[in-house]
Image (cartoon, rainbow over all chains, first blue to last red; front, side, top):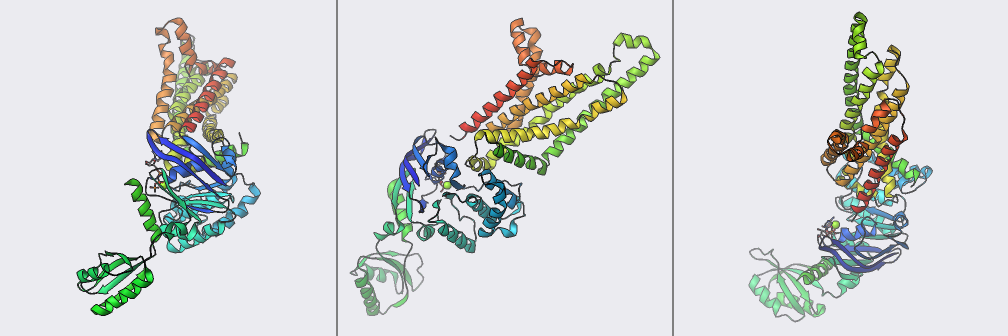
Length: 311
Length: 259
Ligand SMILES: Nc1ncnc2c1ncn2[C@@H]1O[C@H](COP(=O)(O)OP(=O)(O)OP(=O)(O)O)[C@@H](O)[C@H]1O
Ligand SMILES: [Mg+2]
């Protein structure tokens, strides 16, 4: 559905994107990850035919974004990062303007606008001026305008920023529902969101492609870890943990108090290590206060990839 | 070109002109200032007519008893100067505001051609301008009620004013496309419009051939004959070329800003 080949973008002599290639199948949800200034927004602007690439080729739904831009744009719904809206319009007025300008016949718009406002939780503010609604509602209006004509491809630049937790959940399930029928590309800084939503992840850093894979594959190479809090002397515990077989490393956490200490323990043999930790605590008659699995492993992959690349 | 997209953009821009009160403020200011000029021209005319009644020699001497010469032509002159001061205030926001707020980024990813965006915005401003200029027809209508002015110069005069305004707006939308800052856009319009207005002053000081070019380029030379009631296609072509040129430049500037 989306094919990006050798995409390069220069701003003056600053190279914002460097030879990026990837493709997205129909119905997929693709997550775009990268630190600030990595080039996510730049890529999205090119995908949506707003700015032309310096080099490379972008095809959206079978249309070249540069040569056949108008037809490509008909297939795309775009939520820009800044969520730019016409402040001097009412919400319903704005959405029907967008629907019509995207080519929807006038007789369908009214009905469609009511439905999309319902889906995005905008019914309460439908008659308010856009400059008087809150940040979260603006975000919803931005999402609603991207969705209003049921485009085949959705490009969402940080769609859940500024939403309350309940709304984040609703928008996520909305996006999830769109998968299959629509193709979605979204960028985000919330890593769990990627694992929740996306079939595939792209990580870019400083304009270069660092990784393209499913979230499962990206995290599967990682060793299991637990957070461990023990009532005992830090130095003793650290020494004991280091000598334990099955434990690969133990990092001291900064949460130590007078008689408890915390560690992030990485296992290379989980079963053995758990047994050994148990007997270690028994032998030294320490207290086991807390042990829980650490799950934020995509974050670690991300940080590892991004720092490795820039090192 | 797509008439529907142009219409949608035109409609949206018009709403924004009137909901932001810009249109009202500019139109009211325009009417107050032109009304003030009209009142003074009329007062002068009536004083002169009164004196002429007392002393017929005076009238012959000044040849001022023609209402077209004393009121209508100076009025058109004044209106066009005030237009020059007012239209940049109408045009400055057209593109720069959307660039600053970022809505241009979204608008240009909708399936509309750049030319539809430019024309929609241009026509919206033209509509506001037409409302403004048609409201000033109260002055000539008053003259028709009060005296017996020639009608033809008034009609061609209005055609001239409309063409002049349409030209001002095309320049205004161009400067608005060059910057994100509305004040900068308006300043550039003022500067360039004054340039086109004032180059005719240099005509006496340069060689005749060059002088001819300058007076052809001058934007107000072309309205002079229209105000006298002379309909010359050359003048109309001048304004149409001016408009097309600056709309084309606007389009190019919009395209280049995507890079
Ligand atoms: N219009 C522009 N002119 C010049 N440089 C630009 C422009 N837009 C972006 N850049 C540069 O391109 C690089 C990539 O920016 P981009 O906005 O794509 O980052 P991002 O990945 O979206 O970051 P963030 O997570 O902060 O949104 C940055 O170094 C930025 O300074
Ligand atoms: Mg960004």
